[in-house]
Length: 445
Image (spheres, rainbow, N blue to C red):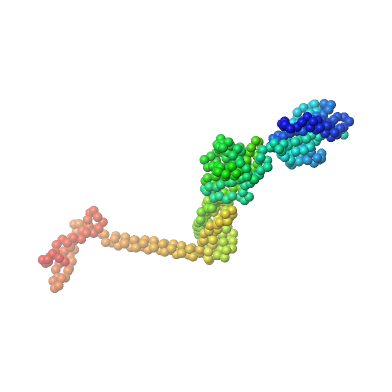
């Protein structure tokens, strides 16, 4: 509760008489509340109290806080020593707390958090025991005229999700509407929690101690237009972990306004690669693989007419950086299919990468395989023949054997020449040497 200037004694007396007139009494007890309105600023907390007279325990009573009707606009119900949550109006869930001030003496209190302009008005505090019931009303006066300028402003952000590719930079922008100077405000970019934050700007400087570790060194605030209420957060080298929702908050004197936006990080993977494996009975198994996709890619096999061909199986794995690796398999009964296309696309970007396999490629591959095998067999055969010939020629001769007689005719002369072929002891090659030649004066053959 806070005190505000501008409320005279006569106003307080008038409020007290208003409360007395609106008290609804039972024959057994009566209920009284504060003698003056409860004043609170937007964004602050307020405490509502009421009490039984004469003092008596309220432990076994039902205590109900409401606005217009006991069964509608219910802030809180206490019954049989516990809170009855199913009767609470949605607008007050998480915003009120039961305070057992002195229940044995008939005094109860309800704390209301984060006061809003809509909380301004009349409230009722009711006690009931059996058929006996008493209640009183009290006022909450929300200080509209004392709240700061943020209460009348809105924070505007992108209406559509922002897309950024992995590894690229992105700028997140939000601004006040209508334009207002935000240099004296606290500005905070957050994810799911207020602390730690993605980025905090306070008193004209960056507050690094409140920043999430994964954003340190990768963020910067563009403050050129802060005097007009516009700020831009620059994030460098985006990764998969940056994907998700962000909130932009402007705060001053405990009052804040915010807006949220969605950031979609996308990865366009590598061009698909198709490999083939021949199976029994003439079947082929095609595998199409690619990596570097986010979010999970869409994978399709299509025939030459663009019709979808169901895959045999598909395997998706996510690496340490969060990017997807995909492998899709297709069984082809024979090589009569003209061509098949493997298509992998990113659903957010609407972009795809393709690879095509043709049966002609298979036939060319098979022909080359046959030629290659035939060439190997031919080389092996030639090598075998040469090896056998070499064994026939390289006969080991006794160096002491008698020389062979050879008849050589030259012109009209027949001379007998004796040649000796010896095999060297250090080489596996036959060496023929002329030992002597008879009847030749020139020494030439």
